[in-house]
Image (cartoon, one colour):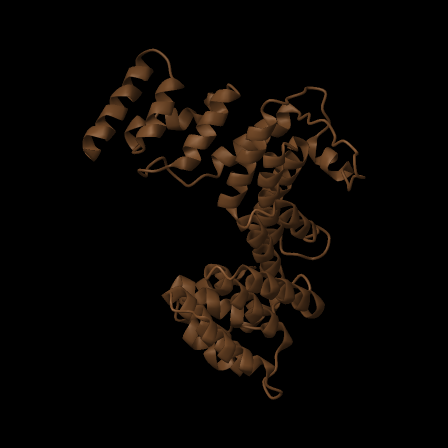
Length: 342
C-alpha cells in the first residue's frame, strides 16, 4: 500500500479511507493531502478537516511551493504555529526547518541552509527516526552537500540511511543511486556497482519502476567490463561486504554474466510501454548497453517495429544494431523522422 493508491481509491469513489492509511502504517493524513495537490485530486479538500492547525499551515506551504511563491516569511509564520504551546508539533518543526533550509539554499544563503538542514535532520532523527519526513531530510541534506561539492559529506549522510533501520525502500533506492554516482566519480567501482545493485533491488520493492530501470542500467554499465564466469552471485558479494578500515582495499569487481544479463533483461522488459515518443533516452541507454554486451536480441520486438519509433537517435541505434536489408529500413526510418521534424 502506498499513498498513490489511497488517492486513486478516493478518485474512484471510496470514502472509508482510514483502513487504507492504517494498512500503510501512517498516523497522519498530511502526506496524502500533499500528494493530492500534486496529483490534482479533490482528496486534498476532503482531508483538510482531518488535519491539525500545524498540519494545515504546512499544507499551505506545499501549495505555495508548487505555485512558486514560497518565501522565508511564510515559513516563519508557520514555525510560530508549530512552536505555540497549544498547537506545538516537534516533528513539523523539524519539517519546517528543512523547508527553510531549502529556501535559504535557493537564495544562496549557504551557511543558513547548512544550519537549518542539519538542525532539521537531528530533530527528526530524535522524534521520528526513519519516518517519511526524516527520510526526506536525509536526502535533502545529502543533496545539499553534493550541490556545494562536498561529496564525502554526502556519502556520510547516505551512510546513515541503513538498509536495516526501517527506512522506506524508495528512500534507500534514491540514496544508493546517488551514492553510486559519487563512487563512480571517485573511481571506486565495486562500491558503485554495489550501491547501484542495491538501489535497483529496493526500487523494485518500492514499485518505483523508472528508478529501478535507471539504477539497473548504471549497474550494467559499471559491470560490463568486469564479467567473470567464476564470480559469486553479486547478491552474495553485497551481503558479505561491510565497512572497511582506513587504507583497506575494496574487493575486486567481478560480476557473473547471469547477474548482468538478468538486470539488463529486467530493465528492458520494464521500460515504458511501447517504443513511441520523440525522446526515449531510456531505450537509447539500454540499447547501447545491449550492443556493448552483444545482447541486441533482447530488443527483437523493437527491432521488428521501425514504424513505431519516433526518436531519431534511437532509430539510428537500431540501424547500427541491424544487418542487411533491415539496416536500410532503419536508415530510411531515421530520414523519415528527421523530415517530419523539419
